[in-house]
Length: 333
Ligand code: SF4
Image (tube, rainbow, N blue to C red; front, side, top):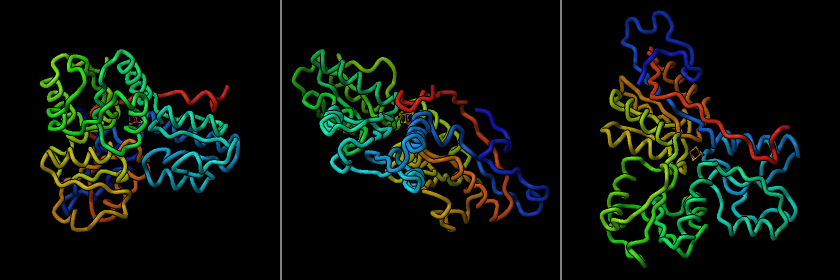
């Protein structure tokens, strides 16, 4: 991990001369990486491009990414978010969200003659491909994930008759399958790395011939944000994670900080910060989930600066360089 004082755009301006004199400055520890991942940037950009090319309204199935600010902003610009495709007029354009959809949803879109633009994150698509491959060779596919999450619904839909959802080590240990010699597992992309390892361990203990994906399904962005927040939590009295309540990777960051023994809270924005959280917090860690825009971090730092002197430090776990090409329907030539 490298540490430097300010410099990052989301750190806001450096502490002013005198800010750290007199009253002891509160430390603000910025976990890095934080905020938008490549899959979320691609999904938001997809809706923006469709709006620019085809004009409003643009229908989007489910929230394009799990962040209230992103959704509200796109809605103001002409996006119409629907829960299911029967709310979309026949023949209209619909964007599928970053979390992916099941084959049944694709079939429904075709039946309604909708023009589909698929903003599913390529790393979610990778898990769908694995689900099809494992199911096709006759395995029971154990999907480790959270019931009801859109990504889980989409992945399970690839082979519903061969896939079972497991959420905890206890469920893994009690699992009954058709053929214990033919079991493979996959995971949701936004799980806690340490907790998932425990579930996989319990599965392997129960099914020694267990096979898994070629490379981790928990994505690079989830892993990096967890490592960064874990490092910051070691030096913080309080950790604030910016993200919405339905953002799986954001919620995992809060839980992880708490497991490290630090008070931690999920906030949609600066308006959610309660004064009592800050009363005894001389070092405040700040992170943001993969669907939370950078400006929300800047606003939190600015708010903390208004309360008194601060010393902002960037704690860099790694630098991310991953980028995904836009869906072909919206690519500029
Ligand atoms: Fe893709 Fe990971 Fe971002 Fe989800 S969190 S959109 S899987 S890069």
